[in-house]
Image 1 (spheres, rainbow, N blue to C red):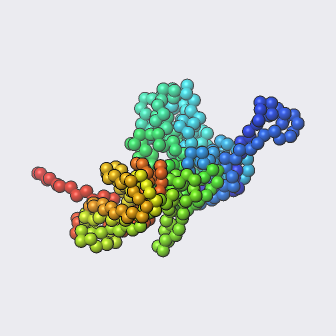
Image 2: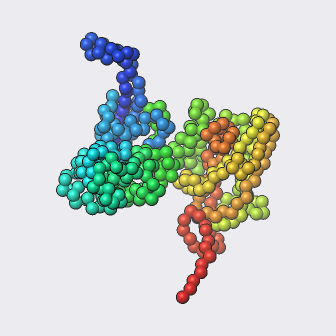
Image 3: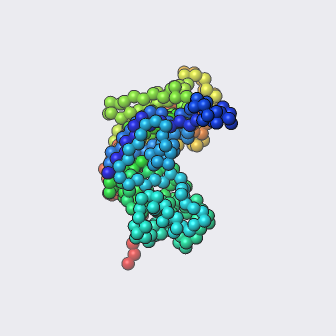
Length: 404
C-alpha cells in the first residue's frame, strides 16, 4: 500500500479574451478560449515506502501537481492512481472553519481524511499532546496564529499513520522546535513504511528524507534522480536562469557533476594540502589543512568573488564562505591573469567522505552574476588516527570537569 502512479498528467486553465466570450462559447459550442498549460506530460511512479521530493522554482507547477494528486483539483489530461489512505498538508488549516473550535475542526478534518468519529475520539489526546496549543483547542480557530493552525493541522493529518503522506511547504512556517518535532514524526512514519511525497526548497530536508527527487521546470519534469544530483542541478538552474550554460557530466566514480556560468573566469586547479604542502586525500580529524585554488581570467573583470562549500556524502552543506564575506577584494582584473587563493582551517569534521563545490561570481552570492558554479570539484575523506572516539558531523572536543 502507498504506491502512487502519475500518467501523462496535464493541467490547463482557460483564458477568455473578454467577459462575453465564455457565454458565447456556451451558447454556440465553439471554443472562444485559449489554454494556459501549467503542467504537461507528467509521468512518474512512487513505490510503497519510497520517499520522493518535488523541487522547482516558484511557478514551476509543484503545488498544482500536489492538488491534483490529492483530488482538490481535477486534471485536464492524464490520471493519478494512489493506493491506501492518503494524508496531505498542502495549506495551513485548509478546511478549518474559523468560527469552530480547534476540537470541532479536528473532527471535521479527520473525517475528511477518512477517519471515523470513534477513531478521532481515540486519538484526541495524542493530537492535543502533539499540537501543544493548550486551552486553545477549545477556542475558535480565528484566534489561532498561523503557527498554531499548522501545529493542529499536522497533528490531525498524522494522528493515524497514513499509507501516503503528502507535505507541501507548510512546515516551513512553524517554529524551529515544532519543525524538528514534525520531521521526527515523518522519519518515524518512513521507518514504518509510509510513502512520502514532499515539496520543499530546503536542501537538507530533501536529501535527508528522500530516496529520489523530481525537478519541475515550467510545468515539465526535466530531471528525476538521486537527491544530491537533482539539488545540484537545481542550484545551477537558479544561478543561470537562462539555462544555456548548465552542463552535466558523469565522473569516473559514477557521481554526476553540474557546472554553470558565463565563463569569464574559471577555477583552473584546486587541491587540499597538509601543513607540509603535500596534496592529501585523507585528513585526520582536527588536522590543519589548506585549500589552494588557482583561477584563470578569460576576460577583464571589474570585480570577482570566489566561494567554496564543503558538503558531506549526502550533499548537505557542512561549511561555506566566500572572499566577499572574508573581506578579500579582487578588483580590476585583467584577461589571462592567474589568481591564487589559499584557505587555511582545521578539519574539525566527523568521519566520512566530503566534497567541495566552488563558485565564481559578482556580488555576495552566486545567485547574481554567476560566472562559474561547479559541484564535486574536489573529494576528500576525514579519518580518526589519534582522537578519542566520537560521533557526529563536527569535532568539538570538550574540557571535562568532574566532582564528587
